[in-house]
Image (cartoon, rainbow, N blue to C red; front, side, top):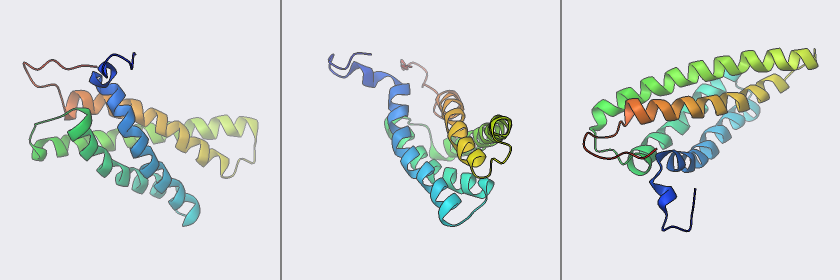
Length: 149
């Protein structure tokens, strides 16, 4: 993608989504690790609450900046919550299974390392699933308006 062509790369919703993701990651992942290590919250409590905090930031920024949606908030917010919850369960369940399996194979006494690895794996899976869900289910391109990927 070229950056010297008057910002054409900004026409791609995935690039804008990734930019919002940086902010969302700082807020959500920071909250997860603060809860996980600062308060001693469990993996599931920390990832759920951290993602809920990040989801609030994500909805506003993706609605206004990424997808420039004009759809009513009442409809899009329910789809957003459904997508976020589905992505959370799928991504973080798969991540903890992969991390425990992978780390246990290398280090039988894995301790906190599996949770930390699962958070990172889950974040990557969550990002990919979340983009697809938001792009096509929450903020679909309006009819008659050319959408850019």
